[in-house]
Length: 395
Image (cartoon, rainbow, N blue to C red; front, side, top):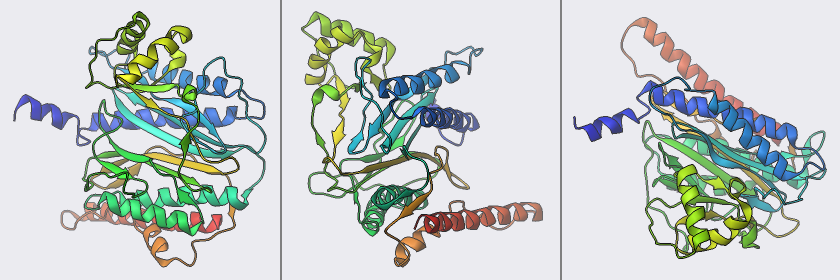
């Protein structure tokens, strides 16, 4: 085996240490999400909430792997975003922004953590109210959650990315909602938040991705965004964009001194992961970022909007395709939902939800191992029943 092959093998989920790092990152981001939800109160400033989410991840990851010989990078893999109502994604404002939350807001929280550049990402939707969520607000969240549950069962070895695209659109339609266009679910790898294997949210002539088959020991960030509107969000104001990622494969000799200064700082502090311009000197950043973006040195994550009055829900989770089945490592429980729409009359969606998440161990071997296999199958059946019951309680 060559050194290159050995290195590739070491980065695989077949290495227990890699699985541990993914799960450690997931545990931290799940707790960070819990903290952010607890900070979401009427009149709370959105920028303060985003800062607290990022600070928690930095603090928790900073306590890990402190005494190892090799320096292990760790921290924020995607800055905390708090996008409200018809805002679809990526709202992570600057310190000068005065935007606050209000009672009844539908809040999308999106964030990521990494340990040694093994990335775990999560997004969750929370309505700022007491009691159950009802009507169209419940429909759009139930659509995102049910689509995520179906995707979890279809993102498995041997299945194709197109299967997932078609299924999540069918689920959204059952709730009279749309899957938002332009959202991609990506394979995750060490150092890579947007791998080449992609699941398209909506098939369209404008957006095409290569056909791909899921394989054992891969990791995916499954990203579902639903809307009560037409699902075709727009960029309204480029100045709202604050999250960027360095394009490592691009080079250009920047002309402006401010651009060179900012890009040098980005290359040192954020060579791989997306970052918020809150971490940069604001005035110089505004001047320098434009040239960097114009010459494709930075990839922007634009703040997109549906029409005023539309509601948008976002569910994202990280899943490890382990030999014994799918392991969803990031998530958060939903509020009680009472949707107006139902999937009760759709046998295909119910069949997808009934699929097991864990894999039955193949026969043979000692009796003891056989029992363990039975337990795995039992847990698969239990999980599929939980999914159906979860959907039923939402209906």
